[in-house]
Length: 199
Image 1 (cartoon, rainbow, N blue to C red):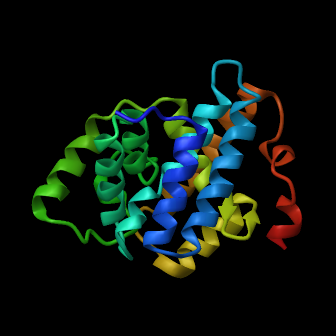
Image 2 (cartoon, rainbow, N blue to C red):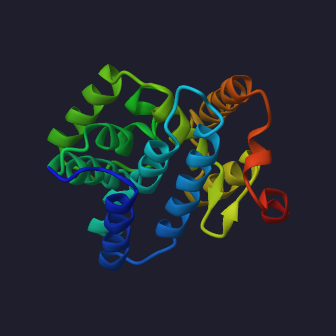
């Protein structure tokens, strides 16, 4: 087992980016920083843990260009190292609604993996770390932080409109409201350059 901390998470992402270079690594770094900044304002959360989970949420992309396969690849990568919560978030970050059929991606996985993921998503117990990464995934472009609506449009242009697109947006906005209530302020105040990068 490799102990998960900021150093090991950063090393893992650096290695993963070398295996499959792309904008996803910079996106992951901004997600991680958003997670860290928001968690630091929440009394019951660890900023360092949140940072690690943000860095690793897309780690499955190390295996090459894929759609939903990166979720299960990331899960396995983290489980092999004993990082169980990070492994869960590799899958849960894409399912703010706990139903595999709300996916906006393509299931480029085996039937066995699909059934595993379907059961895993349905039975997973989400906590604030799952929800925080779901939120911060929608706050970060590879070029920096952005308002949620900009990211919503960015993803929809790339993936198209799906039956659950609006429901997913509503869920992310609900998570945003929950965190702002918890920290008694706006999340955007914690994201340097968010307005400039959203224009």
